[in-house]
Length: 139
Image (cartoon, rainbow, N blue to C red):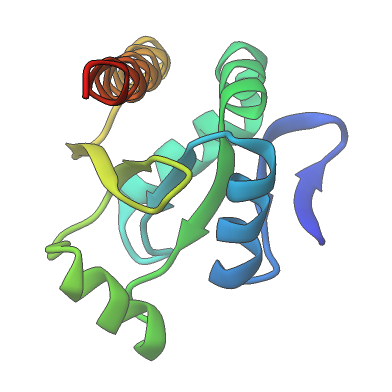
């Protein structure tokens, strides 16, 4: 398993491919955070810099999620993103460890909004777990 990591700072993005990301999420029980952007998009680049340089954002995401990034200009990635309904960048996509999309945010987000989005996603994932446990116990 390899990661993209810069000088002990920034969000740790897995770089081994989608199969390894989903396996790591399944094994750890952590949800998946996907940053979708391109190098040609100014807003995507600004968010990448923020995720690289803001230790509060990085600490939150590294502790709560298995993180990866996707570039829709790559053909195989583009097919996957199209199937997920992604047609613009930047997008932040959150999935549970079973690869179900739980939460999505479109457009540029500052540090505060990045952490808020992550909290919203984890709350929704926790709510989903609680609802599932409740429905299983009451059957």
